[in-house]
Image 1 (cartoon, rainbow, N blue to C red):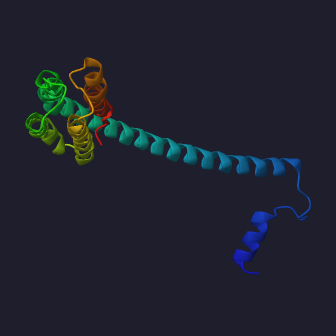
Image 2 (cartoon, rainbow, N blue to C red):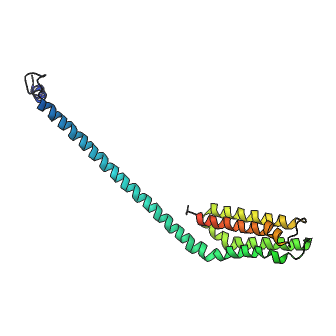
Length: 195
C-alpha cells in the first residue's frame, strides 16, 4: 500500500476494529457537528442583520427624501398659492349677488358663464399650473374636478326652471357644489404623499 491509502485508513480508523467505537468517539463527532451548525447559524444571522440594516437605511432615506419633497411642495407651492384657491371658490360664491332676477335671460346667462370661465382660467394660471410642475396626476385630477364644477354651474344657470334668487335653491344647486369641490381639492392636497 502506498502512503496515501495507509494515511486515509489510519486517519479514519485508528483502532483495529471498525465497529469498536466508544461513546467518547460519538461524543466528539457530535461536538464537531454542533460546532459546524453553530458556525452556519452565526453566518446566517450575520448576513440577515446586515441585510436588515441596509433595508432600514434605504427605507429611512426614502422617507427623508419624501419628507423634503412634501415640505418643499408645502412651502413653495401650497402656502404662497393657497390664497388663489380660496379666492376662486369665494368668487364663485359671489354668483348669488350677480343673479338678480328669478328668470335668467340670455344676456345675464352669457355674463355669468363668462364670469365662471374667467374665474376657472385665473384659477388654472394662479394655482393649478404651479402643481403641474410637481405632479401631473394631481394637476389632472384638480383640473377635472374644476371642469366638472364649471360645467355643472353653467348647466344650473342655464336651467330656466330654477329660481336661483331663492337662497335655498342657490345653496342646493350652486353653493353646495362649490363647497363640495373645494373640500375635495383641499383633501387631495392634504393626502398628497409626494409621489
